[in-house]
Length: 165
Image (cartoon, rainbow, N blue to C red; front, side, top):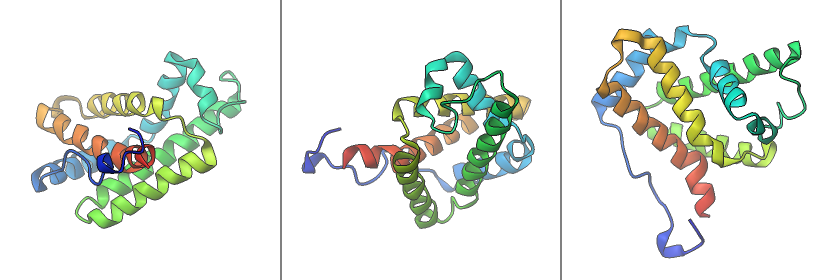
């Protein structure tokens, strides 16, 4: 992005309509919240398909994927990610709250975990694929568009604002 003040980002390029917010909230409550492993599946897939990515996540960097402790850390981290996404979804009607949460979470990931943003889009695509699998026949193009917008908003407040500053 650069440091050009005139190009400084101030808001995401997309927004969610009331209908899209309700669609996300209801689909999350009916389907995704019940899948306790969705977050773990996302990171397991990331580390399986891109083993080098594991080194970019401090809580996984020095753990052998064949070690039982890896599964424990994977499940714990996946649960935290799922719960964070759930918290954002629960607060979609309160933009100030979810924006503040996302900005804080982004800052913490950069400061404490040395997060590498190159994996953010891949993680979101895996998350989207797992939501689709979890929802089965209830998945449709309207839901996909709504979740893609949500993930774009999340990326903006967690990552893009930091990269632009």
